[in-house]
Image 1 (cartoon, rainbow, N blue to C red):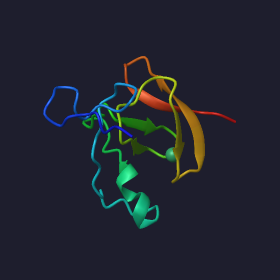
Image 2 (image 1 turned 45 degrees about the vertical axis):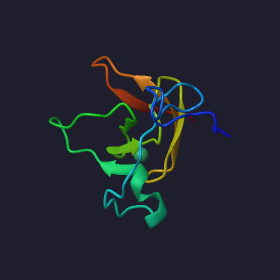
Image 3 (image 1 turned 120 degrees about the vertical axis):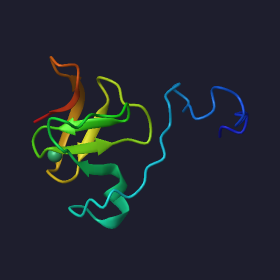
Image 4 (image 1 turned 180 degrees about the vertical axis):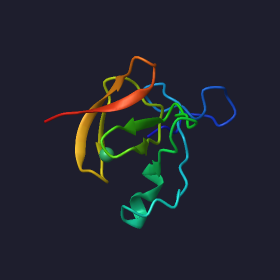
Length: 101
Ligand SMILES: [Zn+2]
C-alpha cells in the first residue's frame, strides 16, 4: 500500500492522512484481553499527561492509545467501559472521549 514511502525521509512514520504513527507496547493493562492491552493504560491522575496519540476516557479514567496521532472529531471505542465516542478538547486543552449515546 505505502510502498512509495522511504524510511529515511522526514515524512516517515506518517500515515496516509499525514498523521504521526506510534508503535504501542503492552502497558500491563489487565482489564482487557491481552491483544488489546497496548491500546489502553491507566490514567495516573493530576501529574499525568497525554501523548499526541492518547485520549482520556473520563468515564473510567483510562487512557485510550492510538497507533496514530489523535485529533478532535476522531471516533474511538473504550473497551474497558464499552463506550463509543468522539474525541473532544476540554477547556484545559486535553483530549477526552465524548461519549455518544
Ligand atoms: Zn472508558
